[in-house]
Each structure stands twice: as C-alpha cells, then as structure tokens.
Length: 492
Image (cartoon, rainbow, N blue to C red):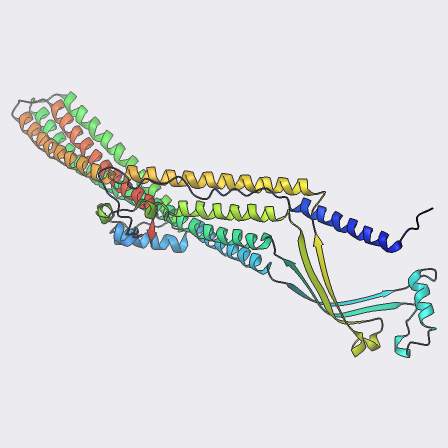
C-alpha cells in the first residue's frame, strides 16, 4: 500500500534540517584560534650590581632638570625648546590625533542614530506588479480618497530617524577601543621620550659650547705664553745667544696655535647654530655659563628599585603600551570568527502623498535584527588574525628589548660619573706639574741649561694637557646627560 505523505511531518523535518544547518554554520564560524598571552618580560635582577642594594619598597623619584643640571641658563634653553622646537610641537599634534582616534573607537560602541528625509518619485509600468497593484487598489471600495495612489508618478516620502547598533558580544569593538586607548597612552610616553631626547641633545650641545669656550680661552692664554717665549728667543738671537732656527721654530709654533684657535672658533659657530636650530630660532647667540656647573647627583645615593626605575622610562612604557594595543588588536581580529549581531530600526512618517505625510496614519516604524556568521571568507579572517598575532609577537620582542637595553644601559652608567671625577683629579695634578715645567724650562733656557726645543715641548705638553682636561670635563658632563636619559628623563 502506498504511503501517504504527511505535509506537517515534512514541514517539521525541514525546520529541523534548517536548524541543524544554521547550528553547523555558527559552530564553524565560532572556531577561532587562541590569542598569544605574552605580556610579561623576563624577570629583572633585583639590583644593578653587587655593591648596591635595592629598596623595592620605595619607588624611584622622577628627575627635574632644574635640580639635576643646576644651571639656570641651561634651564632657560630647555624651557624655550619645549615651547618652540618644531619636532616637539609636531608630537603634541600627534597626541591630539591619537586622542581623536580614541574618541572614535569609544563612540563605535554606541548605537548610531541618523535623521533622514527621503523623497523619491517612481513611474511604474502597466505590466509590472506595482503598476497593476496600484491600478487595482484605486478601484477598491475599502480605501478613502486620501489613500488613492497617483499612478503617473508615485511618490515615496520618509521623514524620521534610523538607528543601527552592533552588539559587541565577542569584544571586537571594545578591544578596538582598548587598542586606541593604549596607543594614546603610548603616544604620551612617546612625547616624554621625545622631550627627554630633545633636552638631552640641547644639554649636550650646551656643554660642548662651554667646553669650546674654555678651550678657546686656553689657546689665548697659551698664545700669550708663546709670545713671551718668542720675545725671549728673539732677544737672545740679537745678542748671539740663540739661532735663527729657534726664532723660526717659535714662529711656526705660534702660527700653528693661531690656526687651531681659528678652527675652534668655527666649531663654536657651528655648534651654536645647531643649538639654535633645536630651539626653533633664527640665528642669534646662545647665552651660556663660563664653566661646567656641577649637577646634583643625589640620585646616585638613592636606594634604586630596579623595577620602579626601568618600567617608568618613557621608551619602556611606550613599548609596553604598544604591546597592550597589539594584544587588543589580536583579540579584536579573533572576534571576527564569531557571528555578528546587528540590531536596528526606524521610526517616522512614511507616505506616498505630500498631503498626508504628517497624518497620524502615516507614522511608521520597524525593528530589525540580524545574525551574520562568516563561512566562505574564513580564510581571509584567518590571515588577518595571523598578521595581528604576529604583530603582537613583534611588539613583545620590542618590549623585551627595551627593558633589556634600559637595564644594561643604566647599569653601565650608574657609576661612570665617579670614575670621571677620579680622572679629573689626576689631570689637574698633571697640569700643575706641567705649569711648573714651563716656568722651569724658561729659567733654564735663560741660564743656559736648556735649549729652545725643551721650552717648546713643555709649552706644547701643557697646552695638550689643558685641552685634555676640558675634554674630560665635557665627557663627564655628557655622562651626566646620558645618566639623565637612562633614568627616564625628567619634568621640565
């Protein structure tokens, strides 16, 4: 006997099949890889070296330029640079841009509301469904005169509001907001880093100018000594106690010093122009101190917490915030594997007649809901997620490298200043002895116990020692600048 098909049974089977298919698609869409959780670098040592101990209960106190360098004229230049340097001002604008990106990311979590006023007119053909429907409707006894449709040109008028919202179930939008927020924080640290580098470059050039001024003064003093020696030798030649060779040797030495002094003046001019460029200033002169003012290095006597100081450096903080941003990017990319829930609707006046657009009967509304799951474009989503995850790995390695560099840099600089102080002490003693040697060589020459070459060598050695002493002073000042940068810079 032939089985009779039950239409209700067939309908239920179709519903079950559709449900199974939909569930399969959703489960397929929801299969997503894991996001890398590398956010913590290798543990830092508890102290920088065996001689010093760390007090981890006290955080590191940030530096201030006016109390670190202790030079009022330098402080004025640093303030001027922050107010006028083009690169620094550009960075401020970039921070404002990053803040705008953050605000856009925050607003993406909110529903969008648009006010709309749409007007259209359509002429339907006689052999179309709409054309036949409108023609037939106008003959109906169930409609009023206001409900009759213009068949020549049928208007469609809408005035109201439309709303749409993507439900952030899987965190795609919230992670985009987090990424924008972390990049905003990174831009702030980038500005701190730029400020530290800018102030350090200005301090380096400023100290170089002081060193060049001191070396120029040394050349001037040495020239006076050389001229006195030349007068002595010339007088000795006039009475037959010295040769023309000695006079020419002293003249040659004097000309060599003049040449070096002229070259030094060129270096002063070029260094001054470089400093003025950083200040964002056309020409002029740089007011500066006549000597290196000893900075207050109380920081060397602090019980320094390694974690506290390293993670407060702007370069390390910038790398850390960028890591958090890339992690949020990866999570947002992973959320693309999951179904998207969109809700929306509209409410307003909708009519096919200008005369009835504001009638109560023209008020219309609609609620929309949709669920979208990726199926055939999963390959593209996987690649986008792969790129985001790899970028996070790169950010982590950059963060680890920033921490490693910061630790080793600070560890190497922490006692460098003390070493230079010892070198300066020995160089001072050397200059004192050479000063005596120059005086003795002049006396011995006059009494016939030394020749002119010994005078020249004594004066040359004294000149070189004095120049070397200034070089060591400059290196000591530069070391303080490097330590300032290694400690994370300061507040100006």
